[in-house]
Image (cartoon, rainbow, N blue to C red; front, side, top):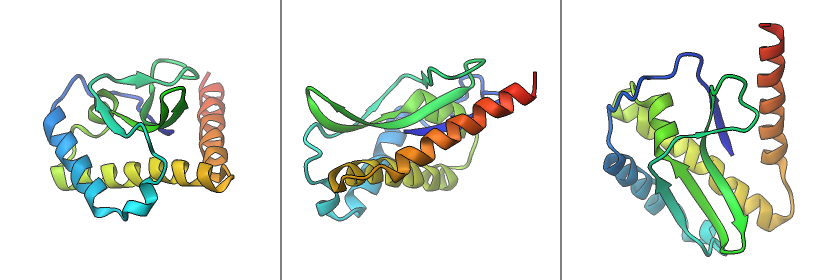
Length: 139
């Protein structure tokens, strides 16, 4: 799960559209070796909404993407609303770089799961702990 803290979220600024975001993600997906997608049987999707992490203190911790394992299968979901809130004010080339980093992060979750480890999950949990400590220190 890729998380980003935003103290002053953009107010629905739309520097790039849902369709442009999807095109960028498609380009990134097409550039990756097909072997990395093995057993990703429920695919990769981009949904329009923003998603706030349940641990968010002031609705300021956005989930940008997540690796999902459920009854449907294994999938990666990207949240355009969250991505736009965090990166919507950046130039398109920088947005592309952030999406590439995000894509690699979520695909790594999938491949770590297949390998039987969860190092990136541990990293994500550490990031959430650091976020919560920073909130405690600010109160």
